Length: 259
Image (cartoon, rainbow, N blue to C red; front, side, top):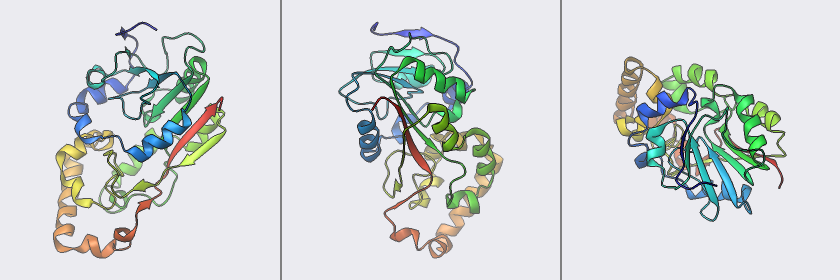
């Protein structure tokens, strides 16, 4: 495997989004050790791994040789690894069976063609671990129901049901990952018990959903949330959440190939 790779390939639609929101992403999206452990167990024993949609390198096993693939140069510039390839998931520039395993973390909803991307994962690796979210899962985050129902339509247009991802991968295992209340990776659902975090523009900027919605939609919603926090109305409605350690919001690790 060539060192210090910076190959240019067809980037796909993800590049524009993450070239825009990628600056500062690493400060908010801090890998959570509990999710890292789940992904690490799925990849245990793999010596060579391709991380497709690698971003800043979150959840990459430290004891393996990882090749990071991402269509966004902004994201690759924040990746600490020596092996980086600028490419889209739908056309990976590697030979058949080039890696022991492939990983893809919260990225398949950005691919232009899920089935083509999954076929590429299976072509270049003998094992696959894909972490994604199921748009059909309930309960949904209170933020969507009460403040930004526009998120529901946007996410439904991007995410594919976990069952479809699992079928495309011919997966043998689907593992749930309830989101802990102190989850460190600032994805959209991370702050379900810390509602004040959504008022921070830096937190919202690290979410592709927030970054996609227009300010004319997001800002009035955040003002309503701010008012509800100040009046304690949010706390009265969601007192039950304040007692929970984690909530299953539909995140799943889908594992396929050689175990």
